[in-house]
Image 1 (cartoon, rainbow, N blue to C red):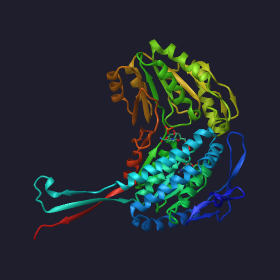
Image 2: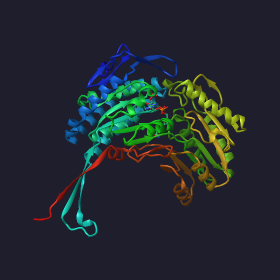
Image 3: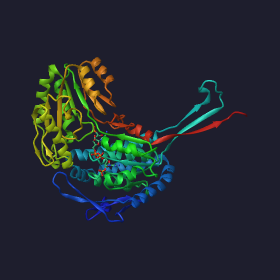
Image 4: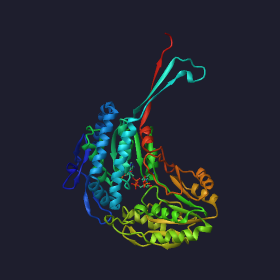
Length: 485
Ligand code: NAP
Ligand code: G3H
């Protein structure tokens, strides 16, 4: 089904409904982070090619928007079926490409299929409204405003390495159902997976040009893309640093940004510690900590901190460290730079007197799961996002201190509070400056129709299926004036 995507491991871009090599012939080699295995090459596009690709996407948009939404939904549902059918093949590539456990990688493909199907259903339910003039003080009954929703035009979707299928699909599907055309810039690590996703849309019968892919390093083509005059909306997921840079240069183009996080789990002394420890470990170390919503700090009330730390430690020691194909919990990080950065944070915490409970072992990009107790506010680990398998426990006197430490962060993605007292739970939840608070649960994005957003350096705009469709469409107002008959 995906044969046309590549020739002799040379992957190509989707351009005008065909698989195209770059005209200049420049390519980037993609290698598996776990063992360095060569996976293929992707085109490194030049500016003139980007101009042509964006132009074709823009040209295709109008007739796509004119297609009845039920027909657009049919193509999305077919895409979802193709993804489900190809989940093993695509998941295998994804697992190799970003060093994600094979079952999780296959699960990501199925999750994306579910997302796309739900988007098709939700898109068919989008309705306009009419508003009478007499609803407003001193106005007569002589006007009706008919409000429909129309697409924005060309959506530029930029996805990160850690969910190369899901965080591309969750941009593309809502954009398409709303009648936009989409240009996908996949992450360089994860690009092949992104191209497979595009192939599923193409195979499902998406008209030529409605989805286009542009591969190349963000550091080389990113600025050109995000300032391109043909782009009507930028939907970006990635680091706060790149997100802020895009926001600075993008001008008047509307933005959706899902960025970094430093999610805190606040554990109050009356919490169910078994539950808290279990969810802290799965939340912090899943995909080796490379999730925006990973638990990145534990703020534990002093009276239960010893017991909690011991429980968490016992579970961390049982994590399976190994290779993605073995479905290990902890696998090699995406690249050496990422592993070096995590090591820096570990070294800083050690040097400043944090107590190492386990970990701090390294073999290339593979870092053992690392747990610290007695982390304090002067340590970088208390504030920075490691995006790796290291977790600090910070001891707090009371809930107020937990709230204060949580809110002092530059980030505001999610937070969690564990307690058996619903009053305390709501009190803490109401005071955390984050997009979402989980009560007795770990931070996580799904289910994918829930609103998902970050505040402060964690983002702008709201994702989640209905919210994403709304964000990538706008009201169109037609006023019928009927005075004077
Ligand atoms: P990243 O380095 O910011 O890259 C994200 C995407 O931006 C990649 O496709 C990258 O391309 C591209 N890019 C780089 N420079 C660019 C530029 N100047 N203009 C336009 N695009 C550019 O992030 P990452 O390392 O892939 O992902 C990890 C980060 O994403 C973490 O901070 C994590 O918390 C965050 N994240 C947030 C969410 C959320 O929903 N809040 C979800 C997932 C991840 P190249 O790959 O070619 O460099
Ligand atoms: O990495 C960020 C993702 O949006 C998190 O999704 O909570 O389902 O792992 P997740």
